[in-house]
Amino acid sequence: MKKRIITFGTFDVFHVGHLRILQRARSMGDYLIVGISTDALNYSKKKRYPFYSESERMEIVSALKCVDEVFLEESLELKRKYLKAYNADTLVMGNDWAGKFDEFNDICKVVYLPRTPSISTTAVIEKIKIA
Ligand code: C2G
Image (cartoon, rainbow, N blue to C red; front, side):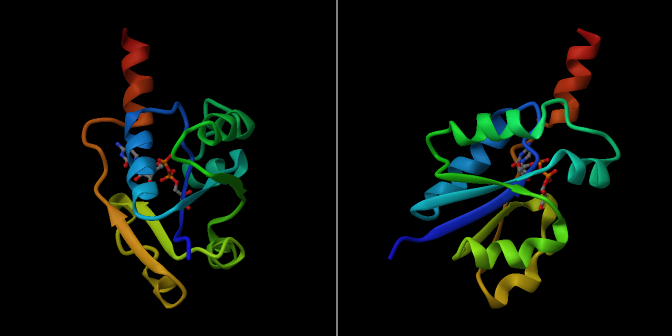
């Protein structure tokens, strides 16, 4: 049976750290589903709207070779519902979320991968501002 991997994120101002976690997530199974945080969810998490809209972020992520399916993640509280609805065998997240999703170990495997060092959306935006 095909192993289904799921991951979540905003993926704003898409960079190589985003690409690498998606590639690593995909290499752990046969089918990668990505929940893209909506603009509203991002505002509630980070108190600012993403630079790219949710439809642009979805368009970018869904065009990647390593991504099979995308959907909009509307709330952090709906994670269990999404894991079930998408029949996920494994939930992959960056280790900035380490331990945060262990409660889902009862329905799927939960794996935290190391983040790519020295790159973030915030760092890219700051660099462009001072360039
Ligand atoms: N990431 C990474 N290396 C970086 C930056 C990000 O591996 N240098 C990973 C993060 O760990 C995360 C994914 O890329 O797994 C997406 O990162 P964000 O867009 O910052 O996502 P976030 O806002 O953390 O949203 O339900 C969970 C949330 O929606 C996750």
